[in-house]
Image (cartoon, one colour):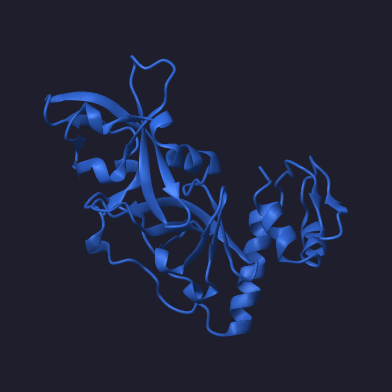
Length: 246
């Protein structure tokens, strides 16, 4: 299991040539599979073309570098249209807002973990407004969006922390779980979290409801009363709003 921070920026070593042939620029996520399918590569000699490595071409991800068989493992994006399509979807896990299937905003992703053998996303670290880190298994992730992850709300019904022995030996933030004693308490707590995450934020675009009416204007600084009113327009408005604030 590797953290994304242990992949981005890593040197890429050609085993056959015994030299560095680039560094990892970004991670390309396949939202349908919930996996890392490609790594884009940067090199000081490449000025125009964008290149990438299919995850299946990676020999290993070690403590200091990523290894591939040879320079031929790095392909021009023009040769792999599917990589271009995935890049254009702009799915980013780190920094994504996290919402439950029923429209409750619960936090933000600060890190995610990948199976270094097949690229599968295994879990994410969810950061709450109480500065707690909750490790959530990817089994609970329903949707990987451009700036939003949708989780099955069942992840709140019990401990979903990932076994720390399976993760990197590097120091990790202290992890805690949500503690909800009743369904009503859980709903009330999530409602409060949603308000705290949005209150004081500025809308970056106009938000419209299902009837095409503008319910939030670009530049609006959200207040608690405005957030309460917006909840009446349903989950779709709150999802759109959570993706459009700064």
